[in-house]
Image (cartoon, rainbow over all chains, first blue to last red):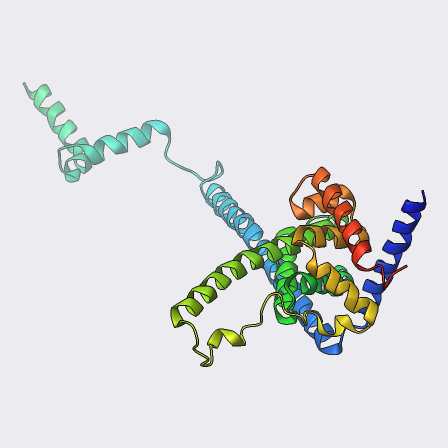
Length: 121
Length: 175
């Protein structure tokens, strides 16, 4: 117990001396420490801003993409008249056929001509 | 964060100055520790900052000792290479020695402080820093172990040896 008390007294004296030494640090050191602290804090703030930028960038890209998709959907939405499924297939056949497009333009005439020939024979 | 750093910067400087014995080096180490804390742990809770800060500082002090060992090795090699008896100016003479007898300038403003610093500087680094973190900074055994990167058992051993040795050495100056 006595030994413990001696230790406590000794440690209290150490703490007091160290605290005193800390408060008596010269102004140059205190100034340089304050400068180092401000520099560290400023760097931390810059990092924080950059982090927000990196976090916000994907969000902005997602929003813009969603907006573009919404606009495209709205412009080509159900309210807008589009060729029906059958007509679209017929158009595709015309486009991909070997005959010239003029042939299809005159198709009704060729059909009439074929009918006339059949009646005549 | 700034408030926290302001509250520990002077103690951190004292710890570093006693460890490395050079005020400029000590200031650099404290600045590095501040930057490390801000860079990696700014988002952690405030209660965690103190042990983390001292852990970073201890890590920087250990790194400094490793670099210093290499520097001393080269210094010794250069001296041998120059040969005996040459008294020309050595550029390394301008580099402050790590075990300088005048380590913390103003820190030794009183006789008691001077005796304490001298006794602390004679301790092995681990004992010295463990003692200061536990006895002066009031870190718990676990926090000190975390800062020193060792086990709680070895913190207790280092601390107990340091108290014993310091009391012996400071008998004339202390209660």
